[in-house]
Image (cartoon, rainbow, N blue to C red; front, side, top):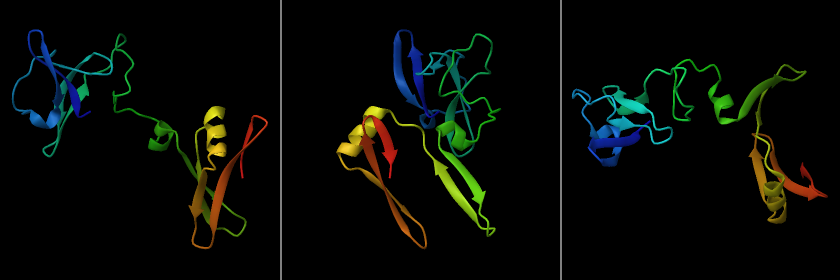
Length: 141
């Protein structure tokens, strides 16, 4: 993560950008705090860019969306909720498919009322999908 809270003096804090700090300097363990979960984080990075990282997760660590444990088993698509998969048709060609998270009915109804559509471009064809709301059932046409 690029930002954290910097408790630079007793009772004083500011939002800190990792690139504004020198990694060769010593900072106390509780100097930087994650703004999401309130746990201590430390300054780290590569020779090109700095960032803040949580310390190793323990049994008492708070759940945090900004934590990266390095042992992630989900793919990037599973983490963000976008399903991408390939299928092979009967002629042996491969096709790339995308799936989207379920949208709340209220949002789908609004999309239908405002005539929102999604257009898909392929080399041979152009497809437009419109959102239709029929008696609280939502369809993509």
